[in-house]
Image (cartoon, rainbow, N blue to C red):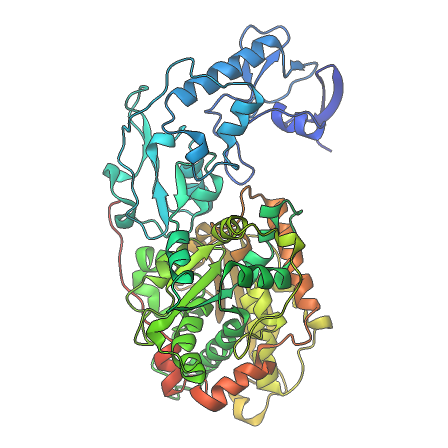
Length: 600
């Protein structure tokens, strides 16, 4: 049993483990201590000093986040001395903080402004920066960087290194006039190793890092009577957007959102789960063909590299392109569901409804800032046009709904539109880490054996969870004759979320010690539900609640396997003909770019 320490915080006696910090002890006792640099997802820094407290018997204020408790310690969290120190710290931060808060994109979720209001800091005691010191960096397709709003809490530095294993940012120079958080040699974001995941945006406490907004461009399209504007919505935003309207995390309002989107002005509302199901059929077939060639030597597919890895996450794809370009052949050639949808809408759908593809504007509601980068990739125009015109984050879509005077929670439920608006439960769980793997197993097992998956309620629990890396095995027995080469094979799979965990997988592949056949990788913690475009704040608890909402929505679906989707079957019958066929290969599959390592 851990050694217990007895201490007092604000005269309240507590017993906590010996390695507990004052901040954690206070949290357990329900005592609020403000923080800025501290975040549950990332390592300790102790640089902002907002969390200072007074310890009886000591003359120096101590940072609660980095000071361990000790036997008999007495802590005061809101004395006059503490309050004055916190005010001075906030006043100094605001003195170097450019711009007016009301015009900031983080107005409403800015932690610095919230603390300033909490401590009554309304005047600029040390003056206020009214001229820019740094040029705004909006070079990236996904992220805008405003160093004039940076408070040097280093959350972005720790997020990019600790969670994603990349290291785009670092603190440089010293002194009030020169010190800043920057990229290598102040390189524009577009030219760095940034994978556009937006995890830094989700943890930045101010407006120093924000997503690049496409809201005005989408409004222009909606207001143009010559344009047929459609939107596809992914499952992860639907499990999170209610948070923007004051609803507890873990609540899905999918059908209410459909109504709100039509009220905003979209002509049709479609379900990205439709192409998630399509992805499973294409990707599952690709995996089986790779396995057949690997196990029998039969030339069934050009690339039979095993293990095969998923390609749904654009942040992960760019990570692989940047850091492991020599192993891109492990990636499935399938486009993401977002990009498959755009290609189908501007070909099959356009012909079906009799509208020219150039007059269709495809908008995606996504949890991910990297989706903005993805839809701007030059490879994503196989329809003859830009397949997806705009990708909006969950936060951007909430802004549009509010701007339209709509309260999402008060909308009546309505269904998705036909002919590509039907998805299954397998598509829904794409939003959680392990979901693509689970959906693939549900379908592949039944195709191979002709029998239903032998799991209660179709829930393949070994692949579920929010841990960084997970592994599972499934022995394949009593297969159909055409799949005899798989008889007795123990299918080994792995799941990783967050690119620092992806790196662990890739190092095993690089050294030739990877035992798996199929690997799912998502760039963000928890998968898409923890995406960089999701509501702020984020935490492990919030991501877990969103995951539960996604899995519950799956359980409530009448169809839970991708190959049972009747609209997908119709698409193949009327247009694509077969998975990995000539037309599907042209529209639904892609290639990758060997970017290679650069210095910055």
